[in-house]
Every structure is written in structure tokens, then in C-alpha cells.
Length: 271
Ligand SMILES: Cc1cc2nc3c(=O)[nH]c(=O)nc-3n(C[C@H](O)[C@H](O)[C@H](O)COP(=O)(O)OP(=O)(O)OC[C@H]3O[C@@H](n4cnc5c(N)ncnc54)[C@H](O)[C@@H]3O)c2cc1C
Image (cartoon, rainbow, N blue to C red; front, side, top):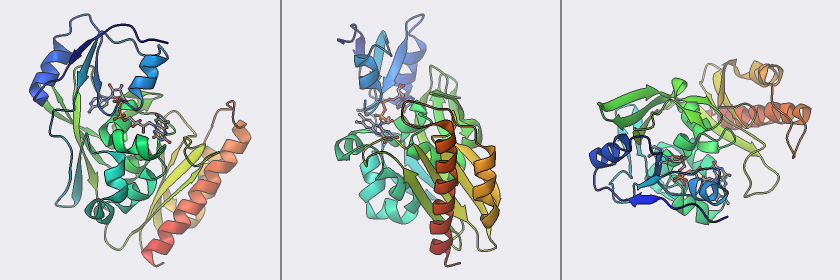
């Protein structure tokens, strides 16, 4: 399908981007970053914006440690998380998850901010972000707003971002040095979205956090003793059947992903 015509803006500052979004009146204005989710949606007629606001001129990429957090600029691409040595050192969980996102072409264009703003429940990086915890930094007409990651994902393709806000960065909490992290994904083929995936953080005392993707309308977070979590996850999730797998099979996959992510995190912690 040929997308219907839209205006195209390429602002030079975040303030200009926000003012275009806020000044769109009744027209539907949408941000475009890597375009790896939005362009297919335009082509399929699932998104029909009147105005596209391209972030490519803004300097929003980069990764830096700030105290006990890591700040990831919105337009940092998945490939940077996967391959950049400093990014891998600071965020090994994100590095492991990023290599499961689509294929190298997608990972070179797709952005961390775009993945979170798009909020696909089967996407890997929102799962990693919730496992770390921290805040999304957004800019809107009133200036900066910080949204805790625990409150950011509201449902299927739905977040707490306002229509006139730009996600500029995400600040992830760094787990203590003594913790271990692990990620596991089950998908039909290597390039596919996850049928289910899990990101885990295990403390040396055996307390763990595991976040599941692909088995609900948003990333689902569980906490408790490492050995009890997989069964708790399997009992709690209520996945839906789809064209690929039954609900019962996806529930089993949730348990498998939790168990394997936790096992990797335990090994990483040296426990
Ligand atoms: C073949 C293929 C396979 C893929 N496989 C996977 C996969 O396995 N796992 C996965 O997670 N993803 C996958 N994707 C999607 C890909 O990861 C996207 O990069 C990502 O979901 C969105 O990032 P983007 O920068 O491309 O966002 P865009 O497509 O540009 O935007 C997506 C949405 O987010 C909004 N948005 C983007 N940036 C901002 C911002 N800074 N502030 C406010 N709103 C913003 C846009 O308005 C739009 O609604 C795949 C895509 C393709 C084409």
C-alpha cells in the first residue's frame, strides 16, 4: 500500500520538535526515529499521520555512566548496544538482548528510544529497561518530565508519553557489581520477534528479579527467591493464543525463558 501524503519536518533542536508536535492542532503529528516500526506501519496503512517529525538532526545518541545509572540517548541504535565495547561493559544485559532484535540492517537503523516508545510487548529492549529500572526522560511543552520505567508501559503499543512529548533519553539503574544478569529468548527463527523472552538480575543473596516479554500486553516484572521464580512466572502469566502458538505453550515458554535467564544471571554472579 502507498502511504497517504504527509508533511515532513526535520527540526534542529528538541524544543523545535516539541513545538511542531504541540502546534499540530487537530492534525496527527508523529515522531520518526529509525523508522523500523513506523515505516512498515505507514506502508500497511496502520499509521496515517499528517506530519512526520524526523529526529535525525538532533544529537540524542550516546551512552554514558552517570553515578549509579547509565544514560542512553534516544536515537542510540541497537547495533551500538550490541557491539560498542563501552556499551557492552556498562549494559551487558542490553548487549545480549539487542542481538536478538531483527537482523543487522534493522539493528543499524532502529533506536533504543524508538523501541521503548513503540512499546511492542514482544520487543526485547523494553524488557531489559524494566529489568534495570530507572526513568524515561521526556521533553514536552512544559519542559523535561521524568517517567519511572515501572509506570511507562501502559499496554499494547501504549506508553505514558504524551502526543506532544519527545523521548530524549532513558536512564537505567546499574545493578550492584556483585549481581549477575542474564537474558533468554525463544523465537521461531533467529530474526523473528520473541515468542517469549526474559531478562533477569540475581543478587548474591539469591534474591532475583525477572521480567518477561511476549506473554502479556507489556513487560511483566516478578521478584523473589531465584529458585521459586520460574514456577511463579508460569502460574501468573496469562498469555493469549495467536497464529504461531497456543496460550498453554506460550505459558510453558515463559517458564523456560525465566528459568534460563535466571540460570545465566546466577552463573554471571558466580553463585
Ligand atoms: C524486519 C524487522 C524485524 C524486526 N524485529 C524486531 C525484533 O525482533 N524485536 C524488536 O524489538 N523489534 C524489532 N523490529 C522493530 C525495530 O526494533 C525498531 O527499531 C523499533 O521497534 C523502533 O525503533 P525505531 O527507531 O525504528 O522507531 P520508529 O519506527 O521510528 O518509531 C516507532 C514508534 O515510536 C515513536 N518514537 C520513536 N522515537 C521516539 C522518540 N524519541 N520520542 C517519542 N516517540 C518516538 C514513533 O512515533 C513511532 O510511533 C523489527 C523491525 C523490522 C523491520
